[in-house]
Image: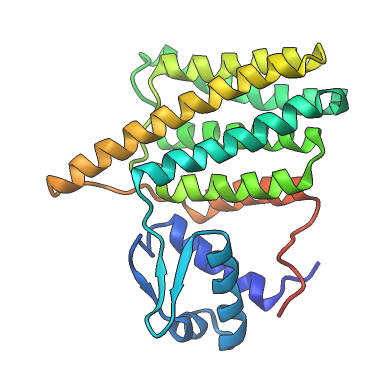
Length: 265
C-alpha cells in the first residue's frame, strides 16, 4: 500500500522522538516540520493530532504543540495498563494459539538466549550496542507474536502504542541488563510458552504479569538513575537509530494486520 502523506509525517515525527531530536518538553513547529519533510502543512497537522491521541504530544490552544514529558508515576501507569491488557488477552485467548505462534515465540527466545550466552561468555557484565539491539528486537518480536496469537487486534494496537511510549520515555540510557536479568527474561518466555502449550491461561497470566512487573521495576530504576545523572549535569538519553526503529515498527504494524494510520493524506 502506498504510504500517505500523513503517514510520512507521522513516521518522521515519531522517528525524531525516538532519536531524541525532539526531547520531552520541547516545542514543535508544524510548518517547519512540513518544510523539513517537503510536504504541505495539512498532513503534518493531522499526524500531530494522531500522535497527541497516542499520548506522545500535547497541543495547547494559542500555545502550540509540545512533546509530553511524563513523570515516574506516569511511567508506572503505562506498565500497569500494558499488564492489564496483555495479561487479559493472553489468559482469555489461551486456546487460540497455534503451533505456528509457538514456533515464532520460540524463535525469538532462541535469539535472546543466544545473546545472553554471548554476554555470559564475555563475563556477564554488559553487552554491546549490537547485542542490545538484537535482544530488543527479539523481545519485541516475542511480545508481538504473543498478542497476535491471542487474536485481539485492539489490544495489539494499544499495547504497541504503550511500548512506543516506554521506549521514548522509559529508558534514559542505552544500558545493558545484567547477565542474570537476561537469563530471567528468557526463562519467563520459555515458561510462558509452556503454559500456553498446556492451554493454562491463568498460569500464563501469572507468568506474564510478573515478567512485566520486573520490566517495570527495571524501567523505573533506569528513570531514577537518569534523573540523578541529569541533576548532576551529565545525564544521557537513549537514542533509537532509524534502522532499529524500522525493524520494531515493522513487527508491530504487521501484528495489527494493516497500518491503521494509512489512507489519510
